[in-house]
Amino acid sequence: MQRAPDFTRAILDARLPVPEGLLDGQSRPAGRRFNVYRNNVAVSLTEALEQGFPTVTRLLGEENMKGLAGLYLRSHPPRSPLMMHYGADLPTFIEGLDQLSHLGYLADVARLELALRQSYHAADAPPLDPLYLGTLAPEDLMRTRLALAPSALLLRSHWPIWSIWHYHTTPGAPKPEAGGQNVLICRPEFDPAPLLLLPGAATWIAALEAGRTLGEATESAATATADFDLAATLALLIEGQALTVPPR
Amino acid sequence: MSAPLTSTTLPAAPGVGYKPQHFQSIIADAGAVKWLEIHAENYMGDGGRPLAQLRHLAERFPISVHGVGLSIGGEGPLDPDHLARLRHLMSWLNPASFSEHLAWSTHDSHFYNDLLPLPYTDATLARVCSHITQVQELLGRQMLLENPSSYLAFAESTWEEPAFLQEIARRTGCGLLLDVNNVFVSATNLGLRPQDYIDAYPLDLVGEIHLGGHDEDTDDHGAPLLIDSHGAEVVDPVWALLDYTLARSGPKPALVEWDTDVPDWVLLEAEAARAGRALAQLRKAA
Image (cartoon, rainbow over all chains, first blue to last red; front, top):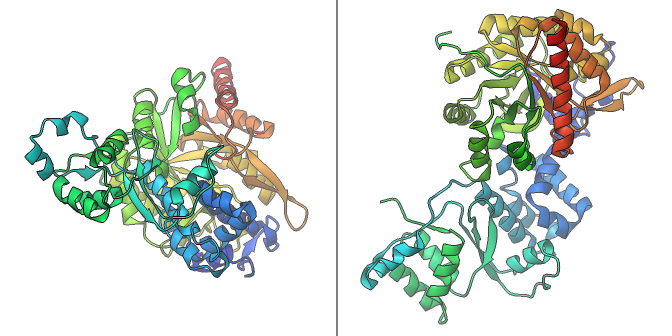
C-alpha cells in the first residue's frame, strides 16, 4: 500500500481530509495530530525562505512574506534535501505574481539575496595574487585571461538593487534613487557582500567571464561606457578576491 | 553484506549538535562537550565557511554525521545524487559515526523537510532494509538508525516499533540510535509507558543516545500531544528516562540536540554537562 501520495498531498493542502487509517493511541482517527506534519513542513520551509531572503521579508513585511512563502512552498516544494538551495525559483515566481506587480524591483532584490547565499556556499578558489599582473609586460597583460572566483556573481538590474539592499541592511544609509544598478557579489574569505559596480564594469566582467582577454574585455567596456576606469575596476575586484587565474 | 563494516567510534561521553554560532566558544573551551554532531546536508555545499569550520573542528573533536534527508523509509529508490554527495562528505571527513532516521522525507522528487512516519509492516521492513544495505555498502561502514517521534499510528502496522528496529538491525547489521526524548514523546502521544519501550529496545545495539526538548500541545480529545521541537531544555522526565536507560545499557555516547531557538553556548554546554553527570553517576554505581 502506497502511503506517500495521499500523505504528501494532504500535508501541502490543509483543505484535504486527513488520510484514512491514521490513528491515535486508542485507535480513534488521528484528526489534528496530522497537523503536526502540516505545520512542520510549512513552518520549516517558510523559515528557510525568510532566512534566505531577509531583505525581501523586510520589504514585504512578515505577514506578506508568510503569504508569499505559503504560495511558493505549495507550488515549489524543494527538489533536493539541500535546504541551502531552497528558493532558487523565488525571483521568477515573484515576477509571475499579479499581487506583487507593483513592486517591480522585488524579484531583482530576491536575485541579489539568492546570489549572496550561493556565494556563501560556493567553492573556494585561490585569489589572484595582485603582484602577478605587475610581473607581466604590457602587451602580455592585455593578452591575459582572468577568471571570476566561483563565489563572485554578477547581477545586472534596471532597478537600484544595491541601494535598496544597502538601505534595508545598513542603519543611516541613504534612500534609494531611481535608476538601474549592476552589482558584483564578492566573497573575500567567507562573508559575501555586494559591490556596486562603476560604469562599464559589468560589461568588462561579463567579457572576462566569457573567456575574453583583458584587452578585449577592456575594449568592449570602453565601447559601452566612455568613462570606464580599468584601474579602479581591477582594484575593486582584487580587493574583493573576485578574480582567480583560470585553469590552463 | 559484501562491504566490511566498521562500527561507530564515538566516546561514551556528552556531545552536542553543532551550531555555527557556537564555533568560537567551542574552540575557546568546549567544557563538558567531548564530541560534535553535524547534519550531513548542511555540509554538502561546495566550499566557504561551513566546510572550513568543519575541517577545523574535525581536527579537534570526534564528529558524528547525522543525516536528515536520505529518506530511508521512502517508497521510491534512494536519490542517487544525494547518495553521491553523502559518500563524498563521508570519504573526506571520515567521521566517527554516521546515523539516519527511521522516516521518510522525499516522495516523487519532492523533499518535505520533515521526518515523516511510515507504517510498520513486512513490506516497509523489507524496503527499509534494502535501503540501509545500499547505504552501508556504499559507505563501507555500519550506520545507526534512529527511532522517530510519533504523533499518530497506522492502522496497517503489524510490528511494534522496538521489534521493528531490532529486526532491521538483525537483517542489515546496522546499529541503532536511541533518542530518549523521541521515546518519551511517542509514548506520551500513543498512551504507552516509556519504560516499557526501553525494556523492549535492543539496548546492546545502541551506538548513540539523543536528548532534546519538545513542545506541548493537545489533540482533538484534549489528550497531551508532545511535539519534538529540539527548541528547549530537556525536561526532567526525559533525564529520568536517560538514567533508566543507562542503568540497563551501560555508558553510551549521549548527545543534546537544540536546533531551533538555539541558546547561547553556556546553556547548551550546561545541558551536555548534565548528560555527563548521568554518565559519571553510572560509573560510580558500577
